[in-house]
Length: 232
Image (cartoon, rainbow, N blue to C red; front, side, top):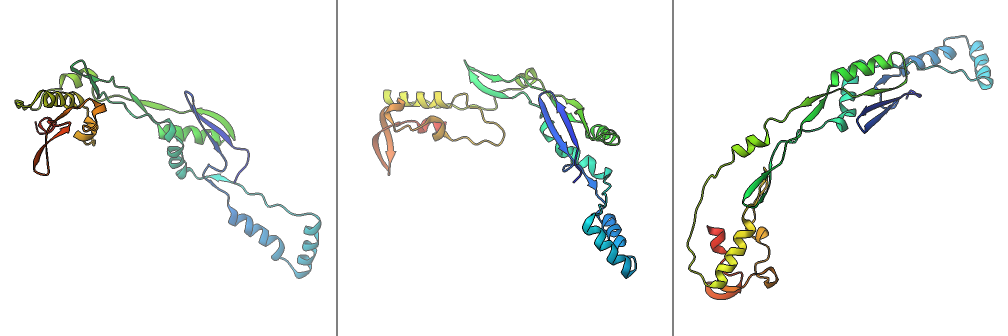
């Protein structure tokens, strides 16, 4: 591949180095091979023998003349610029604190102007092998604000039940309800009641013995009563 090429694409603190190995060049190898073949074979037998002797003393070099494949440059530029792309950070619900959901502020992203960058690369390569190009980008705005997210938050449904459990059972229900209250699910995520409440049969998690059903029989078990939370 062509030597001596060193082009820096930069944006803020990021940079990508492009060398001759990365650039889409046509080296015209077939042309060089044809020239070499013609040099020593399209001649008389005597001249052929003489040239072989000459080449043993003084090798002949056939220069490759690389030319830029312009149609492939834009595709290459798109690959080089992947590290510079910045996705939009849309405002989203991040948690539940003191009885209200917290919403993050959005952050704008930016998109690399591939066509413009390709033109800059082409212009540079026409006259130079080295240089620095600041990657051109365009801002991509959030589609909504945090205020709009908050304004559109509403209760989709509700349900309630009355507990007739023991003090320990009510205590366990309170722990399970507090553990699940305010849970935020992002798109594609699944909710697991057991994973959210933790091991409810472990006394170290604060759960107490209360009525539970096991194999069709009523027993005393740590975490008894929490099924009322999950079913409600």
